[in-house]
Image 1 (cartoon, rainbow, N blue to C red):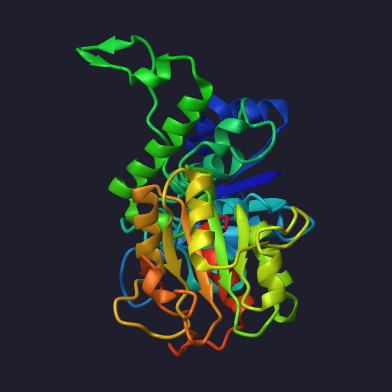
Image 2: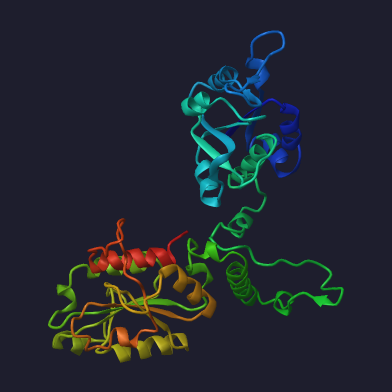
Length: 391
């Protein structure tokens, strides 16, 4: 990947590029980073790059030297990023998107910024590090290069470490410890020194969840739950009266959604006599495991997980006491229980539907707030993506 940094202070950026992980990656060719002095594209003996703001104010970088620097950066137009307090706040998903660009040109502003006409004409993305103001764009440019580069092959020595970082899977990183094992009467957690790698992995997953819930609960809504669950997730579909499983539209689609999102097993309670006689006998090749009743399906999950699951009803209409999915997601991670999503397609609730639920989700709503007219398969796919999808 190629980076170009356009700046009025090239020495500042070059010092950063000569040290640490980024410096090693640049020296080995894993990164192609070029620093461009915007004054090289200015006019006059003084190589003027700024002037007073129209209407009064401070100094502003002029559009023409910047445009010439961008045009001289390569045969094809690079993706131009302008660090600015007015830009979108940088986050991990944006970093991953930028890592997919072939040529990233970062334009470092100064003083009051740069001419708005240049932004409108040449800038593809404005990025902010947060709601504060710096003296120039060089520091944000270094942050961008560091964050993007470490996702590229050959930059970080142990690439698995990137996958363990905060935000990569959605959660914050787990606590880390080094020698000595006892520091000022504070020991390292016993599990980390015990040599049981599976126990260590479980401890780290749980600590990542606890830390995220405590420090950044807002992050949980966009995090995938699957890597952090101790127990399994199940889906139970209660079929309508008089319908065999093969006659219910979308059963194969629902089974495919369950497989895609890591659901441990797709369960069904049939109501037709033929299906009841075969309940529990569906082989592993079947898209679902059938049971004659809700109670027996629930018992099977409880025996499988050695713990009663939290039964979550997928609400198709507004109900008193229904909870928002983001709130329930935090609660499920905090309680660390098996989860059974219940999709009740019956009309008379004879199988024990919402009254058997520990929680019922608020219905999926459309862009104007109205309850959507989703199929059962569509509703299930949306819910699974919110809870189990990869960020």
